Image (cartoon, rainbow, N blue to C red; front, side, top):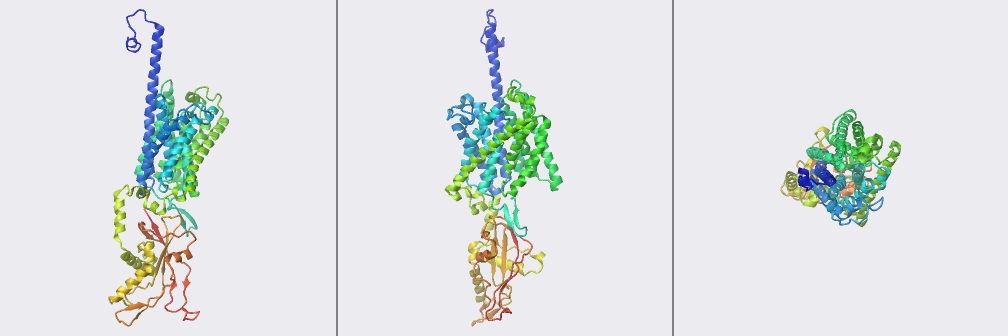
Amino acid sequence: WLCLRYICDMDCGDPGVDSAAYATCVKGWMVEQEKATDATWTLMSAALVFIMQAGFGLVEAGSIPSRGTQTILLKNALDVSIVAIGWYMFGYSLYRNGGNGFIGDLSGVFLDPSENSVDFFFTWTFSAASATIISGAVAGRIKFFPYLIVSFIVGSFAFPLAAHWAWATNGWAYKLGFIDFAGSGVVHIMGGFGALTATAIVGARSNRFVWDTDEGGFVDKMPRGHSIILTFVGTMLLWFGWLGFNGGSTRGVSNGKFIVAATCVTNTCMATASSILSSGIYMIIFDGKLSLWDTLNSALAGLVAITAGCATMAPWGSIITGVLAAYTFRVSKKGVSMLKLDDPVDAFSVHGSCGFLGILLTALLSKSHLIDRAYGPNFLGEFHQGRQFGVQLAGGLAMILVAVVSVGFVLILCRLYRKDVVRLSYAAEMRGTDYALFGDYAYPDFKQQVSSKRRKWTASNRFQRFRKSAGRTLSSTNPSRRHNKPVIVDELEMRNLSRLSRTSTNRQSKRGKASPETMPSTSKVMYATKLDLGGVEMKAIEWKAASETRMSPTNDSTKARSTVKAPHRRSASTLARNILPPGSLQIIRKDRQSLKTDTPIIFPEKEEKNPKASSSEHSPTTSTLVKSNEVTITVD
């Protein structure tokens, strides 16, 4: 009665009710209900995928120094915004069915998506996720405008192209039987290899790979992230959103799709759990200690790898995928470090390498009956693992090519236009991208500490403290007591080093305080730095005159003067160039925060002979360049 009266608008008491019309009415109503149910499921899943943007932001913010927190969060917000506009303009039109096997037609440019609003919204969240992956890889040194161009190109051109190949019914990869159910290749290969390309072109952070004389090569000084809590919360948010990422790719729950969705979320959790456990076992056996950073990244690696085959694998296959993903992540991370590529959040190791692994494992671990249930019985016909592996390999390599070309073209074009248009200057990088962009830091306490330290010293008293500390450090005979920390001076103070020294001596002389007992034994101290790639850990070299300073009275008994000349009349920069390798000199800047002394090092002695003395003997007033201290300068 309810069906007839309120759905089909028929009179229950009418004996002439047409049974065929009634059946048609009921069938149409059931179809509408199925569409509504599928749309609800897809929209809810898209909302979970959108929450992943918060997870990406927290993971990236926690994995970098605090001075770039605001910038990385703003990048994530702008990724979503700029890709949304591009997706509406032409991205969705390039992705959807139509056109040819390589690209969709442009008939849907600025198309009103009201008829396909559900699909439009769902695919847009995937496109934004692909573009966001790149932001963490170049955090801390890329300029804002070039990054926005890269994000727009990846989200509006590169991703729609790959999505059309793999997901559109007329795409060339789809026709060959390419399996990428939720986007290990379409989303994560695009983002991961785009991140690798951007990292290679932009270059490493100035404090990442530092030349070490003792080691005889570059040392990886990976700056630690400032908040493991943010990274943990972000990882759990990503895991939660991934359930909608994989489960929502069924685009509904009607007609048995709910079984496929349940398979997707189950395999997602199994792969993630096995990846975390296998990562812990690996660290205990090979590293001897645990790392929460690597554990969380291993969890993300398992999520990325299972995304392609989440609907076509059995649970045991997903467990194997998670284990292999954890080890692939560790190997890839070491390889990236060996190539001196700086990836602060391991975007390539997590998304690029593990995404490609997931594409290949789908051919080896998928089951034919699960493929038929997910794609339909006529998708592949007869399943052959060897042929399927070739299809998966071809599809993955094609997506890698698109990612590398799209990102590389934009950044290389920007660098050809002007070299400094892509990367921040060294000073801006050391101050932090937050200060360069916002003029402020995310954490007020950090700003107050920096400001108070900068206001504490004037040029004169900074020099006095530096000279006294350096003198005590160099004159100490016990290496364990060489802990005095010289105050850092900037380039301007270095240029005025001799002038300040002479001014201080003259003032003491006028006050009657200058005497052989009160004058310091150091006649002159030179200070320079050895710095490769602008690194934070730098070699600071201190010079000291070995001979004692002798004071002789002048005509005025209340004055005194020094009879010892400095060993070199050149600047500290010139002295450093004579000892340090070419291209490795950088002046110490004021924004260094902490110092610690290390084992003393010995440089070749340089002697200045007294012209009045014989060739075999040194004058008592001759200054000789002798032992130096090695000071490691570390910036938080």
